[in-house]
Image (cartoon, rainbow, N blue to C red; front, side, top):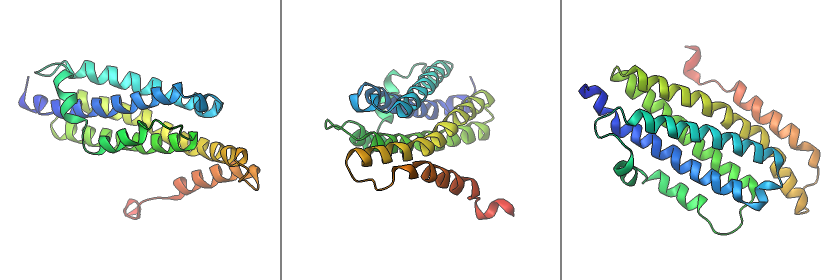
Length: 194
């Protein structure tokens, strides 16, 4: 194998560790009784779980093509830093509101998405097309899931507020979702038009 190919091994291992950690959190959320009473969130979490399962399997399989092979020794070293923060968010023993679970998933999936972008870029810079393609496929899987959280979370927030007697107009969930989607659609980086 080329040095360029082998140079990517830690990056692929990092990506696998990131997605595996998020997957474990989502699996715990799916087992939470409060999640089960929000069908729209439950369906979304199942899709997230499926995508992350496929990603972890693909990354681990891809990792075997590198010298040093498996993920075993690498995960212990890579799940640090930012992932430690997520461990704190996800590993709470107390019952968590579904809206907060989705907020944390949104944050974690954005971490995974930018990590995919970084892996894609690193692979392109090292002329390792197979890794670049894998990272880009995973990014394309994550982007719609992140956007879907934007659509679902207003419904969940309004329902939680209603159940707590704190919502004054529960019909505004659709407006909040629409406003959020519009904000993202109309937001273009200033340099994009140049």
